[in-house]
Image (cartoon, rainbow, N blue to C red; front, side):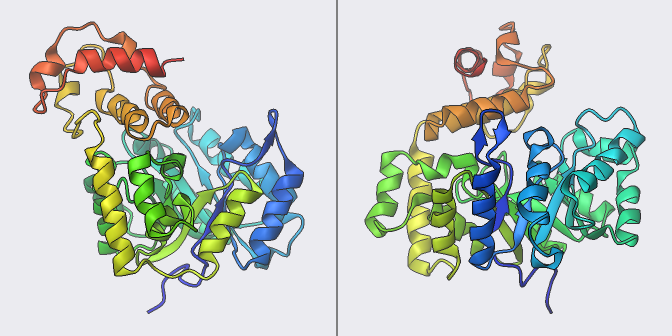
Length: 373
């Protein structure tokens, strides 16, 4: 039996990292990228209320909606009720703002943005589930779902509570497949258990899998020197079953050409190619990093409420992939409400509770020095 989005090509254009000129979107280059994407047979575009402070949705209107018949493409956007909305009316207005900015008339896929942790409760408090169900009933939304950043057990509870959600968007890539903090595989399996089709985000792990350490990169280049590291990551994600599409945030024509070349005649990974990816996973696991399993025992008694596992996750982005910008971005997001590494008072309660015997105080000092801006 067919599922929602089964016929959509398995590469989606993520409009989060558009080409910029200073603080403004390079709209002419964006138009070229949109044209190329559509010419090569791809149709799914993904934006969000908050991307580029709203400029992403505006660019979607100018580069896509105003220039092509509405039935030519699918447009997705997202509502982040937790991002500054003080009440239900302000949260609901995010939907109307997105509709106005994009000029789309309706959204093919609409998402409650970034469920997980304390953020999910905001959607409950403001009645956003029912509000969006009403917009779907009125034809302003074709398919309603949510994006998610949390553990698989939490995803299971959300889907049990909201079985009417038609799809989920998950962070899945080969580096995070068995990650104890991201739980890509486990989240994928939960979505499949609930028969929800999946949109994949971060298949290249925020760019980290495009510039691998030499020991890992050489495994791929030895196997096939003609294809990019990114193409391995995107094909790995796209080879999973039950997908609507795999999103890639592209900033240049070159990035788009590379993605299109590997996806326009897409073939799932062969058994031999899966062995190659497994070898790279092994290399990455062997690179020294902070051995945090995200058990969270350390945070239970922390008087400063420092978000230790999240800080270590950001640090490992640097330690394993040398992606300092990505590590800083992750750190800024995780500590946006406090709990920074520099706030540690060295009481030692975290180290006494850590089953991995991590020198948490010393690692937090390193993180504060490296990642705090």
